[in-house]
Length: 311
Ligand SMILES: C[S@@+](CC[C@H](N)C(=O)[O-])C[C@H]1O[C@@H](n2cnc3c(N)ncnc32)[C@H](O)[C@@H]1O
Image 1 (cartoon, protein in one colour):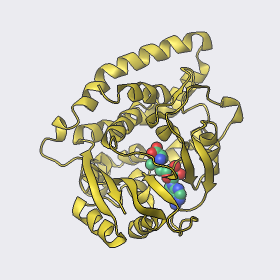
Image 2 (image 1 turned 120 degrees about the vertical axis):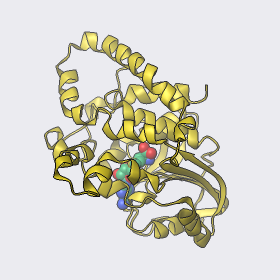
Image 3 (image 1 turned 180 degrees about the vertical axis):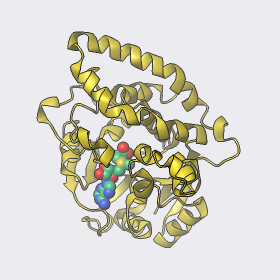
């Protein structure tokens, strides 16, 4: 069963937000054909956990992504609780990743400090990907990015990716499909209708709709941008069924601050055992959903595109 090892690792890291583990496992499966060929760039690498686990890295069982967080009391004011760094919570690497990435790039120093603890990146660089990338033309043989749709001008970001790629180099891009906003409870029931009865969904959405999915587009629209930038489509995989997105849309998100408090108050000698049982329970439900992603497409196209492109 390809990817099941990575799913175990993702659940270990994101046990309090299992919906994130499910989403990221589907990303890993969608990008199976992509190789980080050196020199490689992870554009918007964040804390590096996704790329570390995708590369086969394993952290100790006690590690999770929620040890080093901040602003928990501002969670419902849409604070990025992950934008914090606590040196004392360094992860223990149990298994080195199967490859290294030459450069990790992100605009948040705290996230890069976390990424630095993983031993995955040869270099880390802070910068704003809305601006021209701080790399000379033809610097990389491979670029992975899951952030193009977070940026103000995706066309410009794609042109920049093409500029820093060498001829024959490949880019792997995760991009939202036009169906993503259609699957969002907040968008469908409140943003589109203005029906005040659904206003509580703002607390569930926490600004994600405005921030993350404003650039959702059909495949042909993305493909036109690739062509303009001089990139040819090698593979195109659609993933994230409506069912998966709607599980993710709710998930354990609203309970997150209180779950963190519960974990911090728990007896550390019992926590590992409880965490194992928690993960085993979740796997029973989420593993079949991951396996069935294709089958669950039903009458709507999946919410994300994963493109591998060549210059
Ligand atoms: C969806 S996350 C992806 C993180 C990681 N690559 C992954 O796949 O899990 C988006 C990342 O983009 C970064 N980001 C957002 N806007 C950015 C910008 N303008 N410049 C650089 N990084 C940015 C965020 O800090 C975050 O780490």
